[in-house]
Length: 89
Picture 1 (cartoon, rainbow, N blue to C red):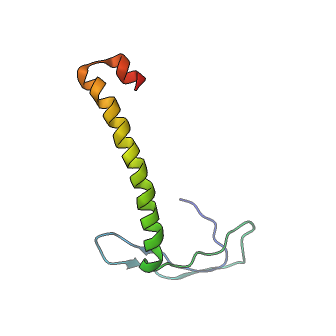
Picture 2: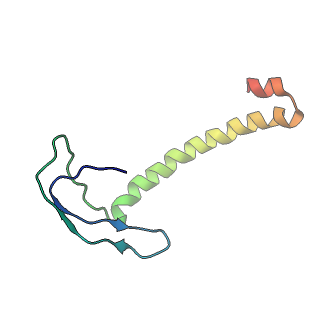
């Protein structure tokens, strides 16, 4: 991944799921703002992430329910070997 950084101090934190956070060193980058850049993103704590995570889970669940119905509709003709009906499903 390639990025263009404006002037400032930067550090990279690696957040593996099953280990502690691995914090990289903070390094200075000389210069000013980069034309067309967006503002920095502030870190979020777990409490800020819970509502959008729950909303995403609900969004996915609706689509999974639709997928189950569609898959069940397709499964029956496939199990019977009815290729034409499976294609029509």
